[in-house]
Length: 271
Image 1 (tube, helix red, strand yellow):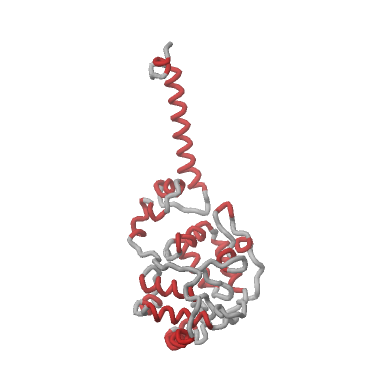
Image 2 (cartoon, rainbow, N blue to C red):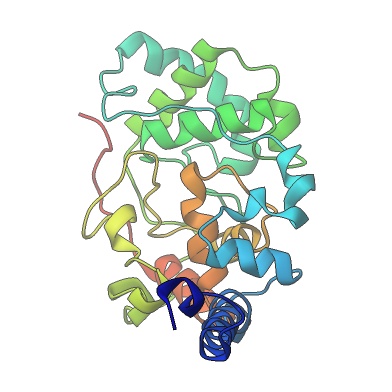
């Protein structure tokens, strides 16, 4: 048999070899792109195409089921380590005047008696980003969205500088301090979850990531659930959505309860 006849479908051995190879590729693709993604108990997919896109590394918002998300606004704020790093006393004073409108929810000293976030001592870049996102519609809230829509860039910066200037104080709703859960200490590397402290303090702080100690447990839990469901999507590069989707309901409750039980560092966020 010549070499030309060897690699033709007239050769039964060649035909069987091609068939077996094709079958292996098909089975491997089905297992890798469909079976294994659906086998993950901590991730839910709307349909098969969503699972295939996820396994292929395509962001879920680009998958076929995510067309509605594409129409929704995403955060356009660009932060650096120098964002609002040198506030002036004039900016802090202007922010103090503006903050009187915020006191009903966030407290006259930046500490909330409700389940609104505590802002006293929060990083200026965090408040700056969130107010911009509320104004643009990248993040929505029935109370904050109407308030932020009329703020100017200068007013947003002044409010951010003022709240960052305030000292961090114990919250009004502290709970007994809880031991640090494993999801906070170690994360879950097999599920792509980094330790919470790698972004939110204790290990490191990433620009734009808030400190969480002493915040309301109900608020923290609600935000993690909103990230997990995709209701909140103003995180940069989907980092919080990807983490929250991979967290179990029990891990979300443990993380929220732990941070709510911790007293904040009694320091100022800015010099």
